Each structure stands twice: as structure tokens, then as C-alpha cells.
Amino acid sequence: MSAALLRALGFILLAWGAVNTGVDIQRYGLEVGHYWWFCNLALAAMGYGLVKEDRGLIIAFLAIASFTQVFWLLDNLWTLSTGNSPLGLVSYLYQPGYPLDEFLLSHYHYFTIPLGVAAVFLLPREKENAVVKAAVLNPFIFGVSYWGFSSAQNVNCIHRACFAAPENWEGPVYSLAFWGVCLVLNLVIAAGLEKVSVRPYRLGRAVLAVCLLSVLAVGLDTQYKLSLPRLRCEGALVAKDTATTGCRYISFNQGEELVVAYRTQNSTENTLLCKVGMTAGQQESILHEELLLTPHAVLDFRTTIPTPNENGQVLFQTSCRGGADLFAIGLMNQ
Image (tube, rainbow, N blue to C red):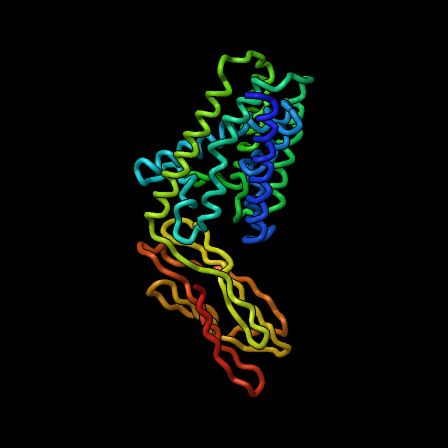
């Protein structure tokens, strides 16, 4: 595997990371923080490292990907084989309502580790700085994860365990202990990888073979995803003379529930009093009996719905009155 090919693959990873981050921010906003998970950051960092031949940066992220992304991969392969996610790390991928484009983008997990390993063996050795970079980047990333996002988002599992665990595996003590373990492992593995200098025979062919198998696995994952129930819930069309309610996104919740994030927007110059209802599959509910909307107000809300066992869609209905005017708006997101 030549340096030119590694650099080309680096540009691909960089582009992949940019698209993945852009979709996350556009769809969920900056506050949710999907883009700040170590796996997504490693995607961009390894891409940059391949382009710049920065072996130390690649090692710093590969050192933590080796004990985080591996669990994601094992959980996903197990789910593909049995239909059950034992660790719960990939449950979000197969939930009804999770968009297919995000599903496909998330499969960079299959490629970053083999390309990172190839880079460790093939890129020229530099000053012993992988441990230093890991020692700086690890606390920074976990610090932003803890203080930059709400505990409900649990970015990088910093507030509580991301898999089934005892109830006391959450809170400040857990956060400090979890970060400490991750930091130590990150530094120890980085120190070991930094000393690697052997260039094994035909490594490039082996890495390309793994990537081809990964492409096959993505195809199998997609086939399985399409066989599961799907739930449609698209954004609302903007109306200039009324108030509308539309879906922002659907996300995985605990147990057998999904979270529906939705937005109500008043596009008029008047103060409106609105009633907002929702139909999810065969279930109808009133979300807001009397919702006061000032002119041009934009309000975001969340509610939960049972996970459907068949294909369906989420529909919103908004009826408002303002002054002497009374009007009803039915909005179907499909």
C-alpha cells in the first residue's frame, strides 16, 4: 500500500467525517453533540493524519478506538447474526425512524481501525509524540463531553455507562473513574503502538481485503435494516400565514420507547393560541391543549411514543386562533 494511496484514503475519511458531522448538526443541532463522540472525531483525525502523514495523531486516536469501536463492531456483528444487541451499543441504528443516510454514514466504524493499523506500520516514524498528543486530546475531548453537553446526551458515555450496568455506574464518581480508566488505557496502548516499526509482508493487501469485507458487511447490515419496521416523520413545511408543527428527529430511548423531537413555529405577526395533536401509527394524542405562540416564535419539544412493530408514520395537527380569527391547520408529514 503506497503513501499516495494512504493519502487518498485520508481524503476520503476527511470527506466522510465532514458529511457525517454536517448531517448531525443540520438534523439535530449543536446541542445534541452526536458529532463529538470519539468515533466521529477519530474518523476526521485519522483522515487528517493520513493526509499529513502524522503517525502520532493516528496512534493517539487508534489507541482509544481499539477498545471503544471494537465493542461497537462486535455488538453490530452479533446483532446482524442474531437480531439482538447484547451490549445495546448499536440499538439506535436499527430503531424505526433512524434515517437510512445516517445509518450508512455511521458505518465508518468498519474502516477506521484497519486503515489506522496500516498507517502505524507504513508511515514513517517521527518524534515520540503519540503519547503526548493522547495526553492532551483525551482530557480535552472528555472535558467537552462532560461540561459542553447535557447529561441526557451522555456524549462519550461520560455521565453513565452506555451498556446495561449497575445503577451506581453514573454520576460524578463514575465519570471520574471512567475517564481515568480510558486515559490510562489510551496512554498505555499509544505507548505500545508508538514503538511498532516492523513492516509486515503484504500488509496493504490484507488491509484492502478487510475493507472489502467491511463493504460486504455494510450491505448485509443495510439489508437487515430494511427488513425491520420503519417510521416516517419528516420536517414540517414552512407556512407564512399560519402556525405549523413538524418533526425534527426520532431518537432511541430507554426500554421500548422512542423520543420524537418536534418543533412548533408561528410564522405570522399575530399572537396565536394553538392546540397541537399527534398521530403515531394508530395512536392519537394531544400534545398541547393551549399553546401560546408569540409572533414568529419557534418552540422545540420532545415526547415519547411506543416503538412500533410495523411500518408507520408520525402526523401532526395544529389548530390555532388569534384575535377574532379562528383557523385550523392539519399538517401531514409524509
